[in-house]
Every structure is written in structure tokens, then in C-alpha cells.
Image (cartoon, rainbow, N blue to C red; front, side, top):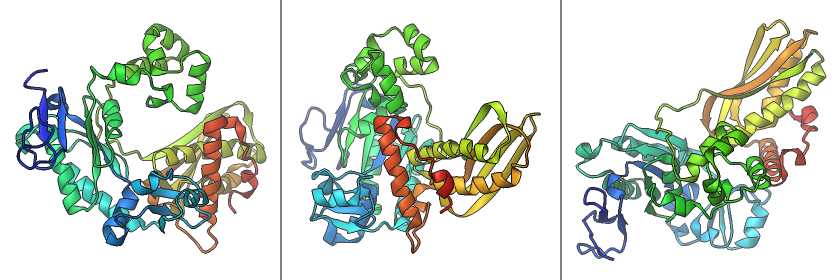
Length: 424
């Protein structure tokens, strides 16, 4: 431990608090302390139970009540406050199950305009700290505060603690902050002390901290890849730490090398403020050229599902759907259609793309088909409610299918019926 890296201060009044359990200046027990905290510049900021926090802010009578933000009894949970989470309520849980676990909960319908406004207010405060802000969703982002000490007259950790106080005072919600030397460890740290948390995880601590955890804990390891690793005898991150990097690379290519680095907490991804994507897409090249319209539609549907899955995972949506075709002589055809409202639903993507496909399937032989979604926006703006609740029902179906596939593998559920009913 050195004077330049060890840091201990009060998160409430920001006074130094070396070796103390409580702040000598204000008596607060909320002391931030870590042997390497003074050298850490990368942070992950996560708003606590964001939707529910905004609702509690705007209705003080809800302050001590369990609050669930979501649809009606047949809907799903968007966000549950921490009081409701004590009873086991979680995001994406069916509402009937959530109310069974927490019958005293107050159910509030989402008000996306309020959430967007609060998100923008928080992001403005982030940008006042550093231009290196990489949003991940409406309520979380990475920040890199390298070189900002002179600007803020404080180490990055102290500047972030001040930021958390300002968000609580000016926006009326709380945030949790994780600090580290890279994005992977910062993301982990932000989950360690929720809500109103402030935690740090150093690269020196990382191997021992990570070793007992399952391989799914690592960034980029989904259910299918985790099952492959388990079949190969790699169940924990400790198993990956003991494996030879060359062996992991031989088995899994570049993904194996990435796993080897992450297993020890190493992550060289920079914070990218201009990471905003223009589109999300998927495409496939056929082994044999295809000209039949029905067969092309059958190949199109799983691509729409892939795009929808990626949109859901990244909490984004899009308005413009683009169909891409490539003929047997390598000539490309692209057609685009703008929806009246943004979507992240595979059925809506497919319905529009299939209409374009019908006009292009003129007997020509195609070697490639693809679909993409652009004009991206936060997921909360997607698929607005209508009188028939069509989009809400489709979202429940697609979320349930995604959950089943995550548990039992992608081939466990066949949604081929949606090829016939996707536009309905």
C-alpha cells in the first residue's frame, strides 16, 4: 500500500477518513476505502432500481412501500424496488408471480417520458465529469476519469462520490458506483454494495475473487457457450485460470484467449464515448442458392429472432428495417421500410422484412439474405401500447421463448408458427 494509491474518505462529506470506521467530521459510517482506490480511473455507474426510484421520487407515499413497475396482471415486471426484491420479485418476472410473492406491492404503469428525462439529467452530470462516457443502457454507463484530477481538484474516486451526492440531490434517485482499472472489474464492483453503493476491485484481488464463480460470470459467456465449457470440464473461473492459454485458444479461438484474460481480471477494452451503433443486423450465406419465396422467408425468420435478441440484450430498439439480398452473381439488393414506431420484436421485424421480400422474390436465385434494424433508440420507446395490446402480448411470448432457450438451448423452442402470423 502506498500513499499515492491508498485512499480513505467519507462519502457523505468527502472528508479524509484514514483508519476510521466513522467520519470524524460528520459521523457517517459510509467510508470509501481501498488500497488502490487512489489510482483507479475507470468506473461503472448504475442507477438503483431506476424506474421504481423515479416513481418513488415523484410520489413520496411510495417511499417505504414495495413498488413494481410493469404491466397489468398478465404483464411482466420492468423494475422492482429493493423492498419488493426482498420478497423475490425480479425484472422480467410475470406479474402474477410477482404479486404472489409480494401481494402488498404497489404496481405502477411505466412512464417512459419521465425515465428518459431522469436518464438525460444523470448523463449530463456524467459528462460534466469527463467526456469519456460510454452509455450501456438508459440507467448505466462506463466512465474514464483519467487526467481529470486537475479539473476537479480531486482524485477520480472523490469526484465520483461527489457526483453520486449531486444525483441524489438534483435528480432525486440514487446510484451505485464500481471503480477499477478496467471496465470488466468496474462492472463487477458496481454490484457489490447496492443500493447507494461504492465499491472497488483491483487487478491484484481479481483472480482470488473470480476463481470460485461459474464461467457464466464472465462477460460474453452465454448459456450455450457455458454449456460447451462445462462439457469440456471448465465449470468455474478457477478452472479457466488453471488452463493453459494456448489450449483455450486451440479449443475456442479468440474467445479462448479472451476467457484466459478475463479469468484473471484483465480487460483492455477502452471506454468508448462514440460507441453508439447505427444498426443491428444478422445475415446468412446459403450453401446452395435459393429462389423459392417460402424458403427464403423460412431463412429470414431466425435472422429476425437474432436481431430481436440482440436488441433486447442491449436494451435498444429501432425504427427502420432493411432487407439485404445478394444474387448468385454477387449483385446486392437492399430495401428499407420505416415503421410507425420503434420495435425490438422479432415478429414486427419479420412482418416488414417479409413484405419487402415478397416484392423481391421474383424467381432470381439468391446466395445471401440479411436483415437489420437502424434508427436506434432506448428500448423504453419501443412498441407502444395499443387497444388490442398486440405488442405487449408479442413481447411476453418472445421474452418467454428467450428465457426457455437460455435455460435449455436455442433448439428447445421452435417458433416456426410466427412465419405465418408474424404480422398479426
